[in-house]
Length: 444
Picture 1 (spheres, rainbow, N blue to C red):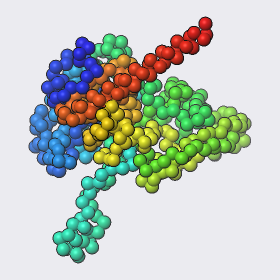
Picture 2 (picture 1 turned 120 degrees about the horizontal axis):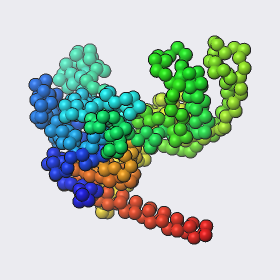
Picture 3 (picture 1 turned 120 degrees about the vertical axis):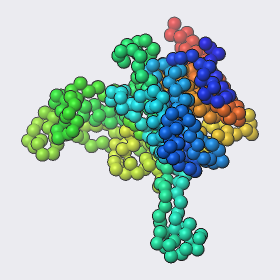
Picture 4 (picture 1 turned 180 degrees about the vertical axis):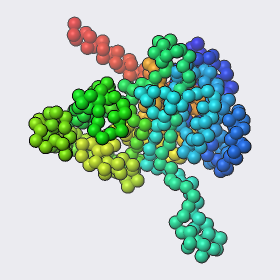
């Protein structure tokens, strides 16, 4: 049904979803309203929401940002293939309601999926946020209550938001086993290989591999570790593609700057031939000296607020602790109501036009998520597509897409951005075809 694919619909998501057949989409990756209004719902309102009612949390930024209803999630369940994954952003304050609403529609949380299938929650850690804190000391001063202002100086009501959760659910399998479902519909798993975190250097890879190989050689046991409850002798081999994707994504502050690179001279390592620990039990054992290659790492001038700066202070050599996570550069980053990068945000728009959507996500982040959630050549659904970042990411990664958006200005922006991405991909493919033709002629 080509008319239903590679399109951005202008309309309400529930109405548009009802026009699609069952088991149509391979994945859903979306950033819905978080329900971040000014009022907290009552227990009675939450119970009514779980039974299908809308949940009014008041206005935020002069707009209604009500959570998707359970009816919407049920339609998502219907149009998603069995075993298909749903990746949804959420707000830290309302993740509990959003998550239970998705459960009530029939999706299963990752807690019911084997560990190998992936994490239940991804955490997008960013360096900026808009605190909703009320400084009670300041409020007392405004009211002329100086004594109480002094008493409650420094107290407030909320933390500064530095992360956004991305919750992961899966439509229940229809086949009796995961492998049968995969053979039938091509869904049921996430793309681990396409989401790996690359090693920071050859030496980093070799160190990682040596550690895993040593555990397997000892029969899968780790000394004095709770992990001995599991047999690790069959652990996956370390891949040159990188580490298994963790459930945390870090981003530099937009105030950080990449200023160059540095070559680190790595000291040799003495490894005991029998796998003994370097401290305590290894004295007198035979060992082999392993000389490691130099490593090249990026050098950043990080702002004081940058999370990568602080985790790297824990390990100042060998690439820093942040090498274990996806790091997103700030020049392609959009934070919650930021001053945006106009080049990425407004790609495809006419000169003088700007993307005015308030919560644009970075393209690279969405590329990472659609790659993880979607099988090759699959169809991605974003039922709250906003200005089209998920659809752009799908185009960039070779997936088909469907977006739904009710705000006319955002629909116009999304369609323009997607058209620019499609044109860029076509030009890249034509350039590659020309290069293949030239090299093919030269080799004859």
